[in-house]
Image: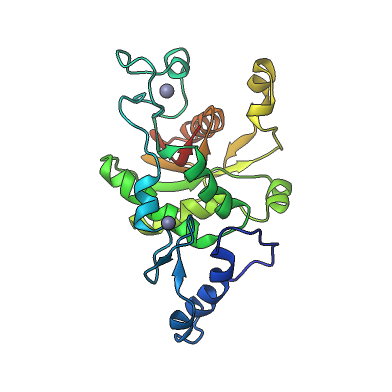
Length: 252
Ligand SMILES: [Zn+2]
Ligand SMILES: [Zn+2]
């Protein structure tokens, strides 16, 4: 894998650590592993070689606690219901969404390191966690895909975090990663819009690029309102797929 030329932002000791890591991984002298001890991407504590987030930080990362909405995985304020207000009042495109945890300090910091400092080791760590979580949830899927960006959006970001996570998660699961969707126009972040603007913002923003059957795993970094996942899932079902499971690192 090639290293990116992007500006790297400071993130604990990780920046200092990541360059020699790439050098070793890319076939450089193994002695660097001894010269540059590994650090936790979250707290900077020394870790065993290959450990990206230390055990103490993993234990401190919050998980979404039961009871959760059976469709979107959000923690339920009212435990006597099995759907959150959003899923209970509208038809969703996806069948189920699963997240590793709530979008609070711990997950947010790691996501920022991955998305904005492009710490790909953190992305691969996410993929390992995502794969384990999917297996633990007992979900069987046939193909893995990502939320596409337009060319200009991807140029502005430098890479597509969703595609990176989808490919890495597919590798962990031994499943094919396929580009099933294309984004055909630029959209606004849903959170910045009024309710009425949100309705039209994503309409026809995606199109299917290949048809198929079976269960699709749609991997993304963050689930907010779920509107993007809904629109992608609807497009996938129009292309013939039977079921769409959404898997994200965090859930707001
Ligand atoms: Zn740590
Ligand atoms: Zn829900």
